[in-house]
Each structure stands twice: as C-alpha cells, then as structure tokens.
Length: 267
Image 1 (cartoon, rainbow, N blue to C red):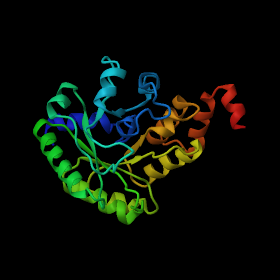
Image 2: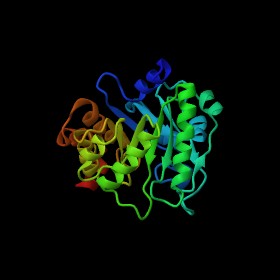
Image 3: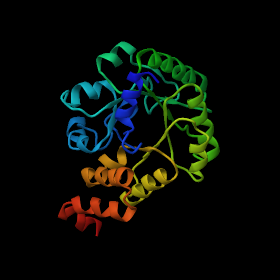
C-alpha cells in the first residue's frame, strides 16, 4: 500500500489494536426509510462519537452528517435495485470524482457470489479496486448473500477469498459456525456484519464470537440503531471490540444506559 492507502485504512482499522467498530447506516439505498433510520441525522448524530467509522451513502452523508465530524467515512458506491427487485443486479453508482470530493476513507460495494449477476458484481469489484489503487482509497467488499445461499463456512470462505483475490482490501461478511476457517482462508482483514435485529444479548455474543474467531471488528447497524438504547449498544459493542470486555461486562454497559421505562419493559 502507498502512504495514502495506508493512512485511510488506519482510520478504519485502528493501528493501536488492529480493531474496528463500524456503524452501518446505508440500508436506505435498497430498503428506503428503514425502521430507526426514518430521520438519518437524528439517528446518526448521537452514535458517531462511539464509532471508528460510519458506512453510508453519499446522499445521507451530504444531508445528515456534520462536515465538521472527524469520523471516517466508508462510502457505499454500489446500488441500482430496491428490495422489490433482484438485489444482485447492482452496479457502481458513484464516480471516483465524487468519492474524492467527499474525502472518504474507503469505498464499499456488494458482491453476490452464486447469484444470477455474480459476474457483473465481481467485475464491478475489480474495476473499483483499480480506481482505489489509482487514488489510494481502500475498497471494502460486502459478501451479500442471496436467498438461496447458505451462510456457512464453505460458502462464506468462497466469497471472501474471491473478494480478496480480486483485490479487496477488507471484506465484510457474516459470522457462521467454523468462522475461523473463513478468516484463515481470507488473506485480508475480515469484518463481521450485524445483520437483522436480534436481542441485544445475542448481538453482543455475536460481536464477541466474531472477534474471538479472528475478525478485526464488526459493522453493525440495525442491532444498534433499532435497540431501545442505541448509544448503550454501540458503547457495549465498542467495549467488546476494543477493551476485550466479556459479554456480561458489555451487557452491563448497555443496561446502565437504558431509561427506567425501557428497563421495566425488558423486565
């Protein structure tokens, strides 16, 4: 990596401990006004102080994030379909010139290995890597899973390895049984997606298992901003990733930030 590439990468994966807490708020590019993200600025603003980076679209970046913020940006640059269509039929939707104007730290796109549009998404990844190498911007490949794909170690190892072989600098994938095999077979850092909303304690276990399995961090969205205490959840996740907190210790952080009403409802 050239200096600029290394510098941008170090903003995302912290050099102090080689770990990363990424806040995913890019869901609207195919889901529209996702629950918890109806008003992006209100959701994002209180969470940014606890995120190492934020993954979003250029529209939300321009309208909903203070330009004075120092939190690194991982920009979603693929899209073209909605939840009503075949999501694998994506293309690159942001020019490299706009990426540079926005001063982002990395670019992100999805690949759909095993889907009808596998080839197109993999070629898009290759082209994006070329652009990233030209301008010193890392590329994060998201191993999106189609309806017929199993989230098991065999499939995820295949998808992650292909992404790395095509030049991705970091890969975002799902946690699975035998996750260590996925990490071992991928020669670039792996970050784990939070996925759909699950109970808070389960989400904390997911984060802990991912780190123990060799991931450099997590990229969580709905399990943070759809929580009854979003700030508490991101603080708890951060404690697991950066402070080696146990699930129980992290759960106490989350619980301590909940209002009395939320605590009564949970009890």
